[in-house]
Amino acid sequence: MRKALVIGVDSYADCPLAGCVNDAYNLSAALRTNGDGSPNFDVRTITAPPAALDKSELIEAVETLFSGEADVALFYFAGHGQIEGSTDEGYLVTPDYRPKDPGVSLSTVLNVANRANGIRARIIVLDSCYSGSLGQIPVMQRSDMSTISEGVTILAACRGSESAGEENGAGVFTSLVVDALNGGAADLCGNITPGSIYAYVDQALGAWEQRPVFKTNVSRFTSLRSVPAKVPLETLRRLPTFFPEPESQFELDPSYEHTSENGNVEHQAMFRELQNCNRVGLVVPEGAQDMYWAAVQSKACRLTALGYHYWRLAKKNRI
Image (cartoon, rainbow, N blue to C red; front, side):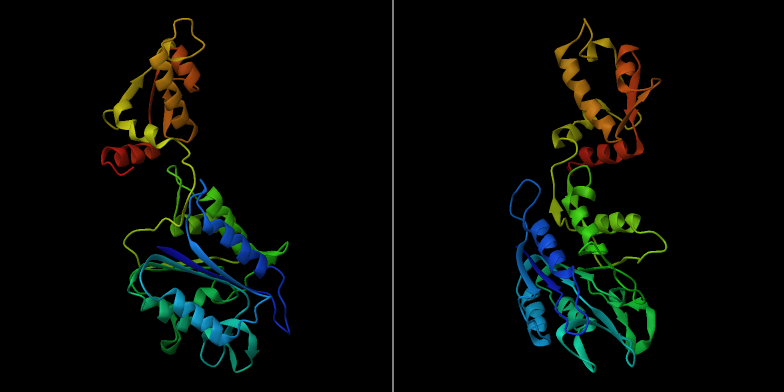
């Protein structure tokens, strides 16, 4: 079972936002199904407006999400964030904000997730100012230390000292996360993990922009969404057939090229698979400028370093 709580808050009396509700709907849509339309997360979406969403309601929703048993539970919040100066504690600000009680502390959210031992993978995604402070230990005044239980992963829009920006009616961070979930962060098999999402967002944001934060305590990544593979899985599984050893070269000749008068149907089918691998960087021609000329000139092709990685996965029956 995979469940997600997605919250977006625009309705702050003194300082309303314009993109958080949009972010919540966009992320919910991305999480609800996989790229092939199959069910993915069972998503509960709460937005303010129209909901009031006071502090107690947010705490209750988080506790409900991380209760019971599940394979994956994902919590997302888009809205204002605040650091309480006297304690250095970060908060998710709720619409019933008061100066001494701004909302739900980040430590409260993390403590609930840390205790959810019935859920194998707990993912926390925050698009709010100062959200990168989640997991720090303010009472020890050690911003370089975090306390995260096994199975917990945090993706935050910015560091604990930074603001999270909005642009064109959406959060900068969330827009990138949604793009990543829609396939931008997929591996060749079509799997999208928290780590690949972070890498995608990290590369998109420059050194002078808000810097995303990634913290995790896991022994293996969980796929958050899948999209169609960039290369048919059957082709990836055949890499050890094409290349018995990683250093092997696959010898080509004109019979592999469909434009050849002496073409071989079986060879041409194999060549199409090798060309697919070439397009995604798994295979390169040897001694020719491209795969076409490698066949016409009776050259060869070989695995790249990335190709060897997928060769090894296929050899070990992991794809």
